[in-house]
Length: 116
Image (cartoon, rainbow, N blue to C red):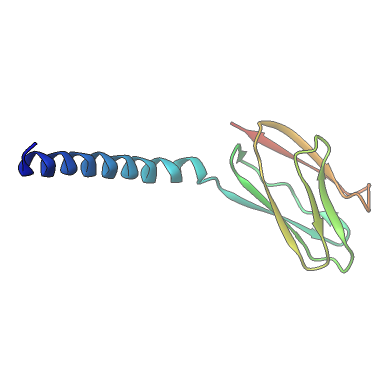
């Protein structure tokens, strides 16, 4: 193999590696770029559930009460502990209705509708 062939081979590998990295860089945000939604807990109640939630979106619950709450999915998809003033998030991984409640205050309930 001549010196020129070695440089040509290395250059081809570099181009292929660069193309692979570029492909991943372009594809990654498309997969990971779900929207963010917020549910506020205030006065011992979950705020209105967000609309337009899709698989891959993130829901953040924010506790504005002075007591501890949870956001616990009945299907086990998430179980978030929310001390006073805290926020916690869950990514919606499946389509369908996701009922949730507070383990400490079972009368506190909500439901998120997740589309595809």
